[in-house]
Length: 164
Image (tube, rainbow, N blue to C red; front, side, top):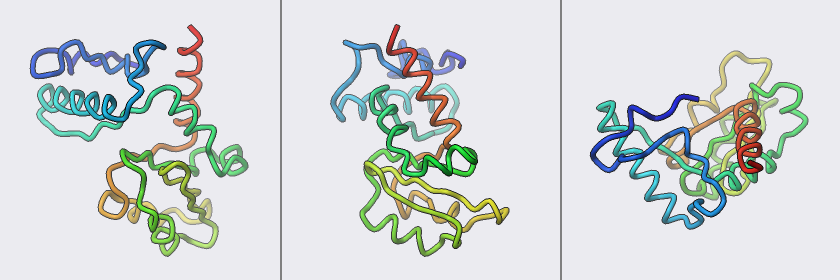
């Protein structure tokens, strides 16, 4: 992973290093307000460096491991990790998020909410899914989607990093 050199400099991004998004014990922001402030600093630095606003969602290593452990579709993930995704939410998805998405799901697709994040198993039979377009910020709030392979690899990275 490259360091966030493009995000260093003036404008609230001093010393921000994207590579260090995982915190070491003792430095880890534990309160949601701390994470919100870090997200804001990173977003400001990114916009200043690259001239474009990008929403950034920060999770602690502990929270990422909890997210990965909460995968409600382990069998599907083992079979086809690229077909299982989670929408990592800045704030928990609305209670009606899963029922609203199920209306767009094909017969062989699944939707579940765990800890406010939305998990989906996409169809292996259809090249396109209506679910993908339905999982937007207007319906669910601010979030970012990652497939199981990425979630698993990031969990492995933060797990190793927290043991050092």
